[in-house]
Image (cartoon, rainbow over all chains, first blue to last red):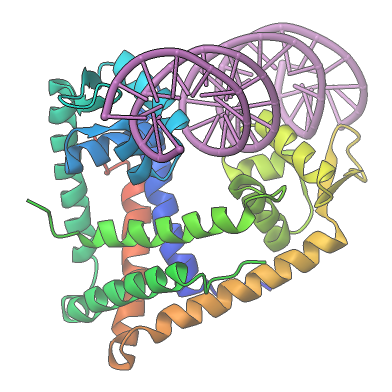
Length: 150
Length: 150
DNA sequence: TATTGTTATACTCTATAACTATA
DNA sequence: TATAGTTATAGAGTATAACAATA
């Protein structure tokens, strides 16, 4: 009795495919999913304190210390003193990391276009409205802790 | 210059929301994402050898040993001797785990329905066709290693 | 007092490599 | 020889708790 996949199954399968492929792409490099996530946040939000990163990544400050250690020793990020707060450090991307992130964002956009092209042209507007509706609805459910799994 | 999120961004954000909420739901229990994944595979595929699990989860046999150790000591799975191959063990769900997975699948289906309901009724058929089209296209791109991130 | 980031410690997940028991 | 699963070891990611320096 194999079950028909639900829409949620499909949405989660899409991100699994993406993540698995990404992991394979980074195998053998110093990059991992967590590190790329941090680079992505730094690229979009600009230089940040570790507290800021911690909030953006949803992890503890201790984990951010370890994560930034890894990024620094692999040459993707640098720590510099905060201009006014001597307790804090500012984490920023190195030049090579900036170029990497620009390429990655470009690839990302291209992939997104390819995926859209797979949808029947007549279906695209409704498809995009649907994806946005689902995103906002899930965001709302999660915020109101209305999702249960147990 | 905040960028408009692409469709891929939205799809990935949906699964991030889901995963983050799931992690929060399991905080403080013996369950983790990896363990739930294994339980899910066992629930849908039925009892399996560790080799089978390894293939289904896409991890090494060694990792499966550790994963199954965790599931067994938390009371979610049991190892029994393979009926014909004395090298192998058969991993199966315990009664409580079976009930948990049934509840989880039910919650999952309900959530999927709620998400669908957030889509305008007139848009639903096109939305579902689009999600399936994107899934299969990404599957195809990944299989042919036509996705690049670097 | 509160905040920033660290050291100390521990658990989970993953991997490779070498090994045992069985096929 | 090949396969199933283990022990041994290691690295990454995460967490809590205690601490130092600074606000």
